[in-house]
Length: 350
Image (cartoon, rainbow, N blue to C red; front, side, top):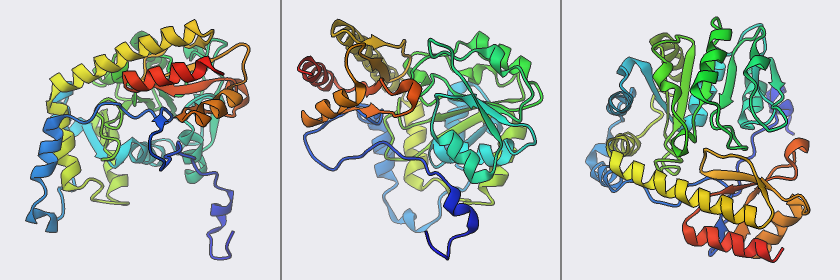
């Protein structure tokens, strides 16, 4: 703590990202990165930007990427916002759409950045308990609120809320923004972007870090009614007018254009996930139903922290959370087949 800090800084509880170890030869299954590389077309597009034009600022609006997203989802470019990773997009949404008198609602087991943003922007919030099967109950959100946000599939559980349930939630809160955070939607769900023309209070965010294998590029998007997008643009242009560089815009646009590669790698991850689930269940684990590129599992007779430590000793890293309700679960990223096999073999000896 320093005397030079602004007063509110000392009370902030920052987000803790997943560990990024610098040791080699680790089986790294803790941060939900895609085991398959980006689209070759995305890499080629980024290489093409490595020229003298780097002396020039990028397009502050990212119009090339907005057009690619709009074409992919069948919306208008005015319904698309782009930013430096979905975390920045979410931050602008918290700042621009959720600062109201009534509390923001989100699940008690959810993306741990949500309470961090509430602390950063002074947003009153309430965490709504998942049911005993770790599912969102739509009826629990039918109360006065200043907004609703949840990941779909949820993180870290991987559980999916179907579109008809999302519609019921939207209909129950027509006067506040409902933000569906779809970081993992491409691994087993149906995007709520299909609903944005019907519900002006719906905002959908996505990242290119997971299903499009561009975590190192930092690109996020939001799709919704132009009025919601305008709020995000106003925040962005009051904070950082150039959130995406030339390579990010080019690479991300090319990734959306390469549908075949995207669909192929998603299917490979899904197939591997089902194999991992079967392997874990064969070892006695309970695994929650997952529509993400990770699984959430616990063993009825073994302590999760002990398992995580034992795996680490064998060079396999998974994510363990210390929240009371989920302290006995491990979140395990779906890796390449050889990584998944190394995980299962390591667990056999623990």
